[in-house]
Image (cartoon, rainbow over all chains, first blue to last red; front, side, top):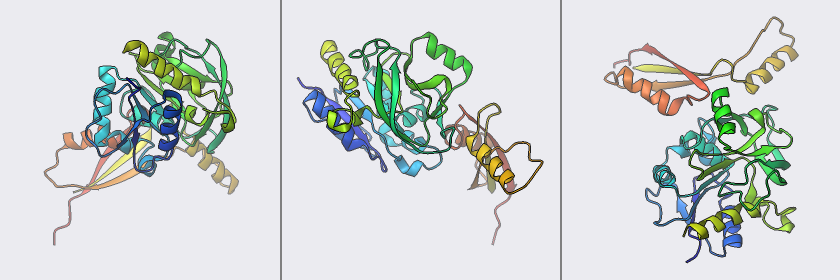
Length: 226
Length: 82
């Protein structure tokens, strides 16, 4: 039984193919591709990925329109059933707008679009997305965003930290994110949102392969729980 | 009925855009500007039958992100009749 993953494509997604290739490279099985207008997801999914891009042209707010699209109702239900969901960049914005993760992603503090490799610290390597990393490991993964400035109020931030839900932190805070937060998981631990792009760091020709372990973690977790 | 929805960042939430506008105003030589906060105005044309509760729900469910934003609903006049 292979790794049954789905990559959701919204109008304006532009990292969906990279995400699909990354999953196929690591899992050995091509993921299913799902269009935003599809009300239903394929059955028996092991993994759902919301890719980066500029869904719906970032109209209103980044991720706001995508979060209300038909397929997201199904993604929310799947997440509530425990299906692992990874949202990268615009996918993270969609997850916060859909209420699957707390907080919001605001315009970068420096106003600029940032596109480069950044150093990240793996804060929690017990999650199903990060178990193949070492605790405290520093990794390098590209970011490419304008709205990656994570905001939540102090109560929410304290709760996230207290519950080990801050999974990734910027070693250098490139966008003004509160408490250097680059990636968080939900309370149940099956939904991860992160601004950096692990799917762009899978093979050494990409300039680094530190994203690979994230997909390896997810695949390993699916095998264990099968 | 015309409705204006004013969406603004909550107090305490940093507004990088407002800060950039502030700097630009200072760059143009304007003095005495203490603070700038940028928001968004959304104009709706709705049936008179649409309730206040429905308008509130539109704002909290979509037009504003309640994590970082507040909204204010302003009714600006009845729809003109031909």
